[in-house]
Length: 377
Image (cartoon, rainbow, N blue to C red; front, side, top):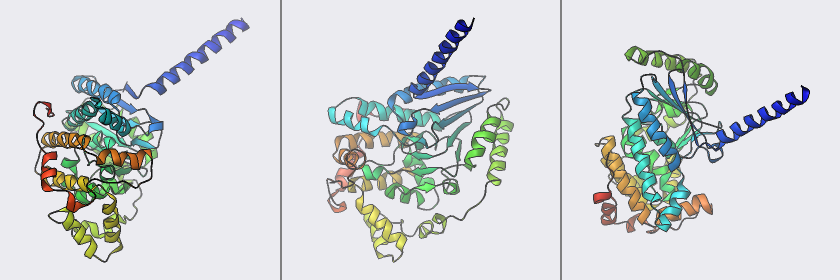
């Protein structure tokens, strides 16, 4: 009997270990908990960076839950504790773009379709943006009905530093933030942290990280049928957790940024002039930051936000697909990724090297329709 017990014990332990390994290998965990569809981004070592495989798992599951009568809400979160999702798998896209691999088209196309699905979702979509939330992670969260930040949240759209632009619908939500805050965030890649993410409207609610995992999730999983009273219940839960979280003064909200004075101009050059003629330390720091960014990306981003302010999310995503494919055809994206993510020397050699050398015609071409290969939503 003892030998049988030992045999079964080791077999059971092996099965458990195999299950843990399999769970570790699955990049997205999809499960039902009560009446909630729960998505866990499961690449903690890569800070849950989004790749094409993950997108292809998420999209059909979201569509299925949207019509499932046994699913009332969808909750998305990240594994590992460090990040919700730190962005897209940019290095893989870079390699594909260099070699002509269709991944450079497929990744952005399917990611933007997913972003639009989240923006149009018919059921409550709750993103728990606990930890680093950048690039592709913003696209998985910001278009949803509820975005819950914690004291560990770090939000940024740092794409101009790698020769890209704040995509995944950045042209839609950024210009709709107060004043010229969106333009500031888009051009500089400034990092919002903690409660500031909620204060400026990127997150809809704020809770402490500990309460998110215990009180919030435990309640949301087992709420009843979906109707308008259900929405009110969710809002009350968020409000109670939000009010019980301690308030701390925000340096960002007392900065000259919110006057919109420095980032109100008709061009990137005009913004730089504002910054260079201002005597504040804040303005000087932002001017230094912009000087490190891709001049082409700065001009593309400025026009993206100016146009996106009057466009629907769908039209913005179509525009951004044109822009990302223009970046794939250019030079700065590959140089930026080399400088920031591969060699990490942070000394990019931009081409063109100055704002003055980036012609209006070259920017116009980036926004040109792609004909049959345009994104269709």
